[in-house]
Image (cartoon, rainbow, N blue to C red; front, side, top):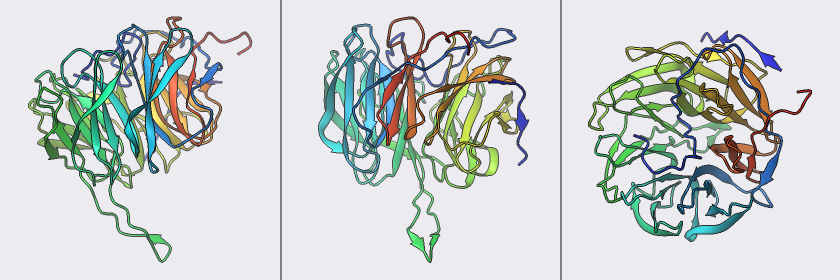
Length: 403
């Protein structure tokens, strides 16, 4: 269906990512157009025979053969092996376990952390597991190299970005607050937990970690929101509080903050991209309580507008990304839900109008998405990490007649 109009709510990623990889924080230059070029995502390749507790997915050329590979973060609450899937160039994947033991992983992020020109893996494990760094031998074989942070951190997703300008990617660990067991049928008083920045020593070690002024986060977005050349951090509040923007002083410190969005938000994930083509990255967020997706436009001068709700019925969103899926140089918004087919919001008119097309089969819960041209046709496809349903690739194609 064609959706126009929006309802207003009241209330230096680093690494040799392959050309096939499209970052979820895409800053695209927008050109005027009246409609979005339609795409469909009907064809699927399931990567596993059964659904487990997968929570994160990353893509990039990890063995240097020019094809996008896949890393799956698995075992978010119950230990499982993370998986590395090497693209064989013939529509199949050679899969292997990452590491010697299973663990409770939310994300396995890719970046060249030791500066040798290939993609390493940073694994964000939940408590009580160690948070791990794996180094790549250049051929897609990984060896455990070290740890970061503390095992007791309730770490969900990590963001890798050069925060202090030294040319090496640092780690931003998003930690969720501690929520005690039910007391008389009601949740206990939440205990805020800070998220952390762990600085890269240039060799892939992250021994120096500093807390951030946050309460509960499951994801953190790095982007230069104020145009000063240093990546800032957007921290969505996961559990009934206000999200914040942390402004980078250019040295990897964040002395200034700005509150953003509703005072009482339940935002699992955010994403950044220049949706309106004015050269500044805007924000998209998903609110689990309100069952909707919102856009906050960057007004400059460290100010953001009120949340603008994307059209459509109430649906429980759980995953969010921004990427240009129809190659019109306007970033689109991709949403994954709980037991409902996902949405690709194709950007029609400088972020003020979107055309929604569905993706996936509506099974399980979509925890993470990433992008790459997995079939070599020049169009970015969607790869998804799900809990309760097999992980898979949804291929980007021209719609059949009649859609």
